[in-house]
Amino acid sequence: MSPPTLITARTKIVVINIANAVEPCFRLKESARHPLVPRRFHPAHAKPHPALNDVQEDAILANGRQRRAGEFRVSSSHYAAWQDLQSDDADQYVVLEVNLIVDWAFLEKLSVVSLARIGIDYLRLHYRYPTQTEVVKENFIEPERSIIAIDGTALGAQAYTITKAGARFFLDHCRIERRPIDSAMDHPWTHGQRHLSIFPFPVIERSAEQCQGNTQLESLIIPRQFALKRAGARCLELQRCITSPIKRRCDR
Image (cartoon, rainbow, N blue to C red; front, side):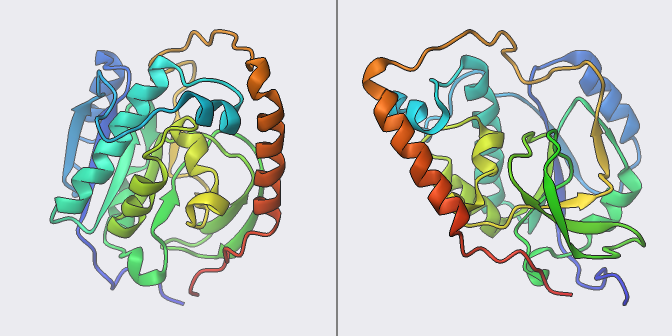
């Protein structure tokens, strides 16, 4: 079967400098000196995005704690990229953070594939946490490169491709900030998008570099008045996960 590169798409690369760090951003710019795909480098949002709504009780019930300051910057930056895509002439974005090593040759091949035309609106290019997966499409673009379905928590919003429709899903789902952005994207049974990735990853995270903003994770205790509601919310979410009707298979 030939790779689906005949279906062309207008793709742009958006690089978000989450920690507004000079050195990681410089290295990524140098490694991308001659890519064919248009790209833009953006500093992280210093303030919460005005469209986002943080409700303390919702965050505690969903995530077991309140949101942290650094997480708002990350969420706001990705949320702004999804909004930009809606009015952009691009069909899809490749969203990257700066602390990465990137296979630019593969990204150039991926950039001409219309993910929407093959039924994919959100495709992770990297994640952090080992979890169960299932191969749903072999030989994607290149031999021995596969699309996999992720079953469980993967974490990490460092690299992904998203279409206009996929961005609209997340604009609605993540408007109320219940979880860190990568955790919110990990919940297909609530936002309705399949949780897919590429393996082997075309992007890896650099060692010992944290560009997530606030890395001082203070201890937070669930207020007593929320403890029972939190337990109920976890049971409800487990039920939704088990009974989720989301199909993993994509067009072959």
